[in-house]
Length: 82
View 1: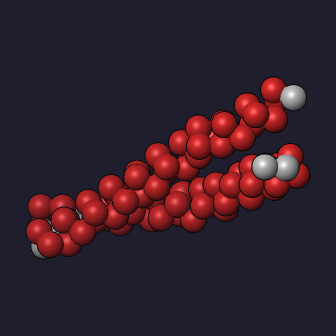
View 2: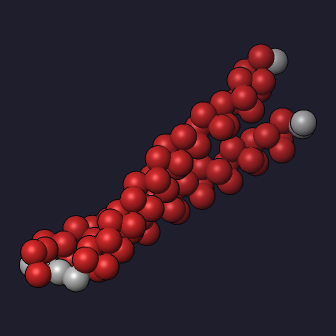
């Protein structure tokens, strides 16, 4: 694979990771705010369950974003070999 293509892939992946972190932070902060404002004991169990789904989905996406550099490492390593 040409170096220009590798560099472009790394740049695009870095930009995507950066752009995903901001909305995920908003979602996470909003979820925290909602949980802080509601009376959890009186909350409908289905709502509590779905708030948990949201929290888990956010956590999973954040973990994937953190792993992105590992996916790109082979491209970066091949570049530094030359």
